Length: 187
View 1: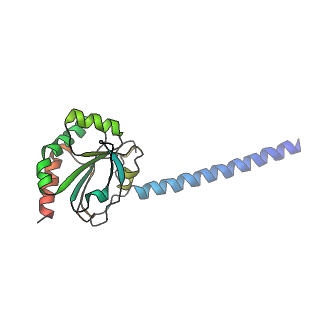
View 2: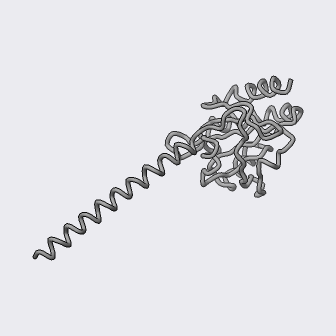
View 3: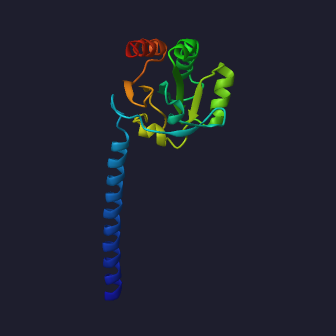
């Protein structure tokens, strides 16, 4: 009987140690998430990335060296707000091209979803797939629940430096806002 009591007490100590250890891991992980969730600051080097586009090609930030990049994060392909935002960027594509600026959209959707979205909506700029949400997180652009990208945009200069940050973007006027900022920054 005493040996059974000893084993039960030892099991309880082991369980307490395990629970404490698990709590420490959760706490450490949550502090990592908090650090990962910070937006890149204006004037900071833009975090590098390499993701697949709707064309199935690998795209990296360095591919845009020498030109401006409008890097916009959006929640989901084929939803109302995301379609409006994409249509407006597409509508203004020639103005961005004239300003030597590439438009690049990023969501947690798959490459196949991007193919379908681009085909259905006649989108010609690059959409990048980040189903792991690693790159989305590196730009501090995960939604509050972490399920999708938050609607944020980063205007990156030809040297790879963040020049403007937009958070909680409203889809309708956004392309015009970005074009105005790009015009101002290029003066």
